[in-house]
Each structure stands twice: as C-alpha cells, then as structure tokens.
Length: 472
Image 1 (cartoon, helix red, strand yellow):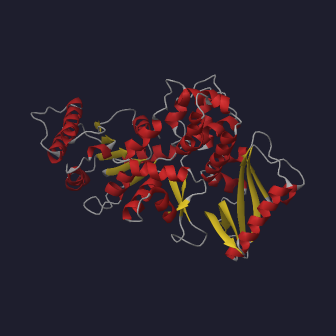
Image 2 (tube, rainbow, N blue to C red):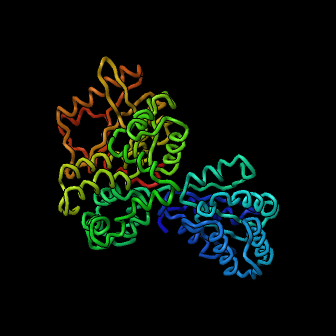
Image 3 (cartoon, helix red, strand yellow):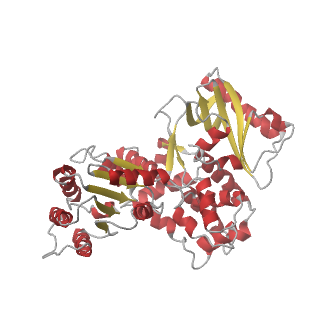
C-alpha cells in the first residue's frame, strides 16, 4: 500500500486497544477509504456491510439482513426496523469467538434514509451495548463527508463525543503519486506527474486508471474524451454520490469555476441566484468539508470579507479544460496541447497544487519549524488593488508573498513581470501596515532561470521541492 502509514497505525491501535473503540473514516469519493480498511485488516471482519445508493429503508434493511446471514447469523424474519436490525447484530457478535470483534459499516450515509430512525438505532447500539464491552471495534465510513461530520462527529444527541478515533483520509501528495506511478511502471517524469496531478488530484482510484505506455495527454484522451472514456461521467456521479440534492452544490462550484480568484458570499449569491441565508452557509460549509472549496480572508481576519475558491483539481479540470476541449468540437486533449485555454488551465491548476503542498513549500524555505499563518490575501491601497494566492506570515519577522508559475521550460522572469511583483509587494505593505520584511517568493515548475530579474527574488521553490517527502 502506498502511503497511509499513519492511518494504518491508527486503525491497528484501535484494534489492539483494551477497550471498545468507535472509529470514523471519511473522505471524498474514490479516495481509498474502503481499500485502506480492508487492507489493514486483511479483508477479515466479524461483520461488514455497505449501504445501498438511492434505496429506501426496506431495501436497506433487506441488504443488512443479507449481510448478517453471510456473517453466519440465522434469521427467522426480516428486521422490522433499525433497532431490530441492530439487535440481530448484537446476537451475531455475542456468538462470535473471543477477541476483538471488528464491525465495518461502509457508505453509512446511504443507510440513513428519511424517517428511518437509523442514527437513533446506531446511538442505542453503541451507547447501551457496544461501549459497555471491551471487545468491539466499530468502524463507520462514508464518502458523504458532510453527513459523517454532522451526524456522527458533531452529533448533539446520543453520539456526542462518542467517536474515539477520527481518520480524515486526504488525497495523495505529489510524492505519494510518484511512488504510485513507479509501482505501476508508468514511466512518468516529475513534470508529467505534476501535470497529471493538476487534472486528477491525489485521488488513488483515478491514478489506478492510467495506462502504462501512454503519455499523460494520451491518458487524458482515454479517460475523458474517447467514446468509452472511464471518467466521462464521473463529474456528475461525484456530486450525486455526496449530496442528496446535488444541483445547488454544482451551481456553486460552477460559479466558482468561472472565477479563478474566488467569490465572496455576496458575489456567489448574485452569481447563483441563491439568497444569503443559512442554507447557502451550510452548502458552502459542506463543500469545504468535502475538500472541493476553500474559504480564505485577508490576514488578521476570520470571516469578514471571506472569499470562497474552487480548490478540487478534478472539478477545476472539468470546468477549465475538459469543457473547453469539448466546446471546440471533435478535438481531443492531445490535439489541444499548447492551446491558450490549456495554458490558462495549467496556470490556475498549478496554483492549486501549490496550495495543497504548503508543507513542502515551507520545508524548501527552511521554515518547517517556524510558526506561521498561511492564507491568501486581497486588498487595496492608494486606489490600487492586488491579490496574492499564497501568503506565509512568519513568526520570525518575515512574510513570503508567493507567485506560482508552471512552464514547459525553466521560467524566465522578465523586467515587466518583476515590476508587477514589486507593485504587489508595495500594495500589500501599505494595506496591511506590516513592519515585517517582505520576501518575493516564486514557486516554479520546473525551475527559475537565473537572469538579471531573478536576482531580485528572495526565495525560489522548484518543482522538485514539491516532491519532498514527509514535509507536513
């Protein structure tokens, strides 16, 4: 298994605990939650069950009964409700051999159908029975991250503070994708891995679909543009699998996909037609919990002036590149390489990759152990405005203003670009009133060409630096 060492140790420690443990594993669709759990326990569970998508309570209960029978329990009748179903699960566990009994519920959000009483029955099972024993390891898992957070982790009823281990499963880093590509014998260079990451993110399932012997461009054609493309319908299925009513969420990310720098709450309301109510707030929170968007504000502020930005690589690729290729009719990705819209997408997508590897950037700047506030910034001074996607405000008296550039050859900074960076530094200093030293920092793939203008840049981070292992 590539990566996931920390997560595996957490699961193993829960298994070896002298007490019963309640573990919640969550993360976006295709991130490898089920694979992690099955591999850690060698596919051996006392009881395992997966919820069924788009199915009502009766069908869910029927499937649960089937899982009980497969685990060895003889049922005389179908469970009448979820309380009855969990009572049958207790019977199965009571007759199981001594030792830790591992109970694994996959895609649990699908089991919680309207008015089914599922969460109440789960509360009763854990609070009144399982937690009173020392031999139960209950693992719940779901791609609908917002459901897991709201119904399990932030539950204000009987499950409040009952989860003993939380495992949010994050996408692979560039380095982990490199190790994955090596294990698959893909033969990609680091630039090609970065290019693939810009489209697929660190989602293991997507990387598993890449074919050996094909370049990234050829793989994009096979995954998105051929008549039998495996990811041709993935975008719609992704949001439908996470949200019961996906249309509002797709409208929000669509609006953000048209504005790379992000939108405020008021701007989002105007773009989507959704009123600025608690419903919009909840939808934004859920998208943020699922890792599709990020919220940021000017340094020193928390919520006032917050801006929301699309951060998910796969979704960004859908809006900025895939749709553009389809829009020109008949062309594929290989034929579109080097076109203006592909170049525009590369610039935005590489910025997102950098935001996902801030730990590696800090390590390259040799400030991994320095306390720092990491944020984006936009503001104005003396009638001029500027936006900076990555600001590292350090406790050692330095602020790094980071500029990200993706190019096919070593990036050559010219005098005009340098003047633009200096202007941004001047506006930032005037608007924030900071007395700290302000370092212009470039994060460049593959690297920065050393010329006259480049000597005015205080710090440079290369593509290789983003592959640094263990920098978090």
